[in-house]
Length: 609
Image (cartoon, rainbow, N blue to C red):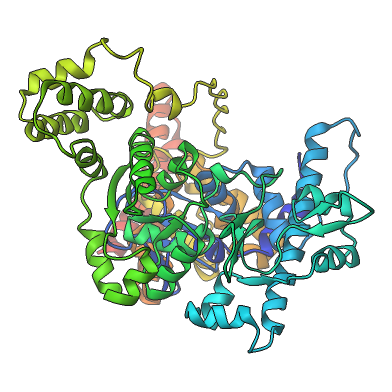
């Protein structure tokens, strides 16, 4: 869908690129802007090189050279199309979408409307559960449980933790008062129709509630934990139009900004494990919700980091989970490590008994998950021939999905050393077709999709090309778009007609047009132009960063130098053209023009000295 420019401007002005990017990496104020580690997963860095300008609403990484505005970030990082980014930002700023004429048979549009209604219902339920917990008396069993788990007020607020009352239909009645139909509440899996009589009853009752948020903060579903004896201990929302548990990791709306700077994610099994670790100070965490890791989970992790530590229980179920997780994570190109806490039943108990520093040490020294799983396969290993074949049959599907041949080779050496067999035998066993048809453990088909990939969108052709511009022209672009004062100096200098590079000239002419129409839009100029450049990274340099200290005298000197160099190039080109013309036809007027040009060039050189 196409939205009018006025609506796009309104949405853009109502949002802040700093707030959006802060969801994915930690930004610290520096000079006139913010600096942090680059949030893009294909750029591994240890020091902050990612600059965000709040005044201009743009970002630039001086390491990987990615640049853009709020829309390009949502496209490149979250994979949103431009209309999706507009709709997300409009919803975030509570701006209603323009009314459009639509065919009632448009199934996609109907589904999108239903999703929006469900998200609204979930948000109302979230507010209801939070308020119910706040209003519970200090002697209420749920408050006693919260105190027992040592959940601070700050943690409760951070994770929107609430309470589903024990009554059968309190949420159903509340949703009805908020004009949420019973059918929508049922479809959102907040309530369930009664088998007898009319109306619906609440699915969650007498449970501590954990809303499951999307990375952008929308309430997708809920998890409820019982605070007393009973089963099931955890109850999760069934899947809906907006919630697919195989594609969502709990907690990322709160923890994604910590994962990228650490370049590591710690994956735990449930809500309380994550919340407890976050409160203890280990914040680069994500949690599954009572299900095994899936390929979609691995893709989510890959967008933030390549490094994973998975915490498993020490029981048989934990061992099976480790085996299932290994090929999934390796197939995604991740580097998984595994940690089994034998000293405690869960991370929360471990931190209580041994302290958070002890757990951090274990996390950072965790062995590769491949070696953890190999150790499980080799329990009671005595080197018998049948055991060797069995281990290789278990290892083969794991090797089949590893995309990096170097890692395959190293793992093969590891197996050969641990099993005390030759490396050639291991390689032969991994490629042998014998035994494959009868092997029924994890296969590559279970961790990779055979669905055809959608055709890639044609790349958007940039409106302006600045490739090949001189260093003086690029520097002029940087300086002119950095501050209104610089821009006005450039306009007063009337230098535009002397710029040689057509792309640079077009950009500055477009910027002048926008500026003349509305000077208050100057701070938006860079954000408006950046998506239409072939090489936006050329507009940024460490000296031009909004986070660098402003030096008026230095910038005036740089501007002056740019003008002189551009004028020199212009005069030189003009003289060359006139010289060529004189060769064709001796013209006294053209001869005089060349003499004037030469005098101007000499005057510029003299002033420069």
